[in-house]
Length: 291
Ligand code: HPA
Image 1 (cartoon, rainbow, N blue to C red):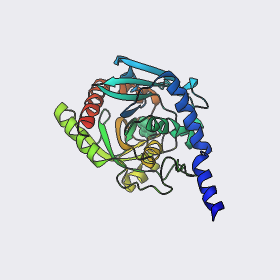
Image 2 (spheres, rainbow, N blue to C red; image 1 turned 30 degrees about the vertical axis):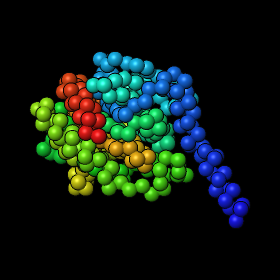
Image 3 (cartoon, protein in one colour; image 1 turned 60 degrees about the horizontal axis):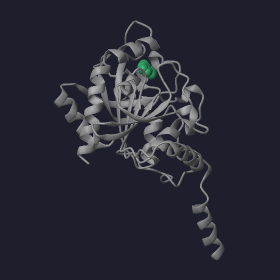
Image 4 (cartoon, helix red, strand yellow; image 1 turned 120 degrees about the vertical axis):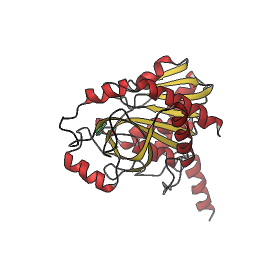
């Protein structure tokens, strides 16, 4: 009996390897800043310039953190920015890493876990996505109501990091309803129309085929991309309140005659970035006021 108690105690004292890895990044960040974020923000493809006009308290390059994955995609810089937005302390991921770059899911969600452990209770995920719903058009913003993750491995596969959350976390309100209501109010106040829909993360890096997009539409998918879902799952696991906004940069494969390309994605994201920035700023203000 005593032995069982001792081994349980030992398990609590000895950190799991995955948790140790997160902690060593946190320790490294804490040597440079004691900034405590309330909100974490992930900037997607072509949306990275949001960070350029902020007053930055501190910034940390991903490459300066131990064993940290660094993005290889153009349009994705790699650093954490620590800044006050409307007086709210926010940690921003300027550039994310993607599963298609060859990293493990554990790598891809590491930054999310770090931002959660730094203190962020709310996570705002943004991305560029293809419109699957035929009523969407390039330049639209879509608030993610739910997701389908059938095409990618679950980031929680493997040993559960009990320090972060339970083995079998509930996902029924992953994209926090209250946050979505706030976002919808903000959209109305700013006169920025917002669509809502189900997002699916496909593996990439090739875009989907027209047959896949027809199948996804039948499954109930409204927008498709190559990120976000795994990050949302990891954040939900550790109890963060999650919201996601897609910038619809193109109609998904097969809907229009033209082929898809990354330049178009960046060009459309660039075209709408001013309203996107306004939207994000106001969302940060309103969702933290409402707390
Ligand atoms: N498919 C997948 N990812 C994307 C797309 C798309 O059509 N557009 C932007 N990211």
